[in-house]
Amino acid sequence: MKFFDEARIEVLAGDGGNGSVSFRREKYIPLGGPDGGDGGKGASIWAVADRNLNTLIDFRYTRVFRGQKGEQGHGSDRFGKGGEDLILRMPVGTVITDSNTGELVADLDTDGKRFLVAKGGNGGLGNARFKSSTNRAPRQSTPGQEGEKRELQLELKVLADIGLLGLPNAGKSTLIRAVSAAKPKVADYPFTTLHPNLGVVRVDDNRSFVIADIPGLIEGAAEGAGLGHRFLKHLQRTGLLLHLVDISPFDPDADPAKNAKAILKELKKYDEALYKKPRWLLINKIDLVPEDEREARIAALVKSYKPKKHFVISAISGDGCREVTFAVMDYLEQHRNHEKADS
Image (cartoon, rainbow, N blue to C red):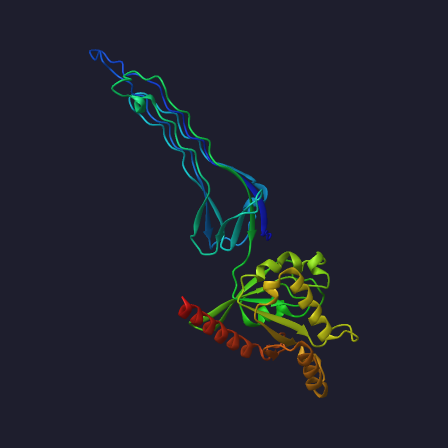
C-alpha cells in the first residue's frame, strides 16, 4: 500500500428535512386540527481516529463526502427520519485544519478520539408546532436548515517516541532493522527510504517504545530539496531525536562534522521547536574506520557537534545498539514520570 500523509477533502453535512403542513381529516372528527410533523435532522459527519489505519490513501481519490438529508415531516404528527451520521475513519495522528481559514479543527492523537467536522442541519417545524388558542388552523411551517459545508486539509503526523535524523545512507533504516522487527528497505545507495517507517523496540517484556525513520535530509531540504522535508512533520510529535552521522562517508574528503551541522541548519530553518527538541548523537559505521583512527575521529566529531549525549555504534553489526535502546527507554520513562508528576 502506498503511503499518503496529506489529503484535501470536502465535507457536506445533510440538510434538515422541511416541516409538514397537514390537517387531521377523519370521518366523524369534525374538529380535526393541524398535525404536520417536523422534518428529520440532516446527517452530521464525524472524524474518528483508528489505530488500524496508517495512511490517508482512502481520502486521496474520494474527495467529497456527503451526509444524508433528513426526510420531510408527514401528517398525523409523524416526524421525518433523520439522516444517518457519516463516520470518516482516519489514522491516529491525523491533524485536521480548515483549508480556507487555516483554523485547527481537530487533532486525532489518540485511538477512538472523535470530532464533529460538519454538523447536520436541524429539521424544519411542522404546522402542529404553531397551533395556539388564537391560531387553530396554522398553515405555516419552516424549512430544514442547511448542513454545514467545509473544505478540510488532512495531515498525518505519525506518533512515535523517537525520531531518526540524518543524511541519506547514514544508516537509519539499518538501525531500525537492528533494534526492532520492522524491515525497511536497505541498500548501499542513498534515498532507499521513500516514506516514513515505524518500528517497535522492545527492551524487555513490559518496556517498549516506537521509533520513526524518515527519508534522509540533504542541504537545502527546508527549501524543498530532496524528499526529507516532506516528512519532517512526522518528527514533531517525538520526544527525542537520534541524529545518525556516518563517521566513514563514501566521499573521503567529506567532513562528518560539517555534514551533521548542515542537517541541524536545515532542521532549524524548517521548525525552531523541532530544532530545540532533545537530541542525541549516534556515531555510526564505526566498523569501517581503522582501529588506530577511531578515537581521534570520534573526538573531533564530538568536539564540533557538542551533543548532550553521544553513542558509538555499528548498526549493521548491532554493536552499541543495545546500549542505545536501554538509554532511550530510561530517558522516556523518566520523562513520562516527570509529566505525571506535573499533571
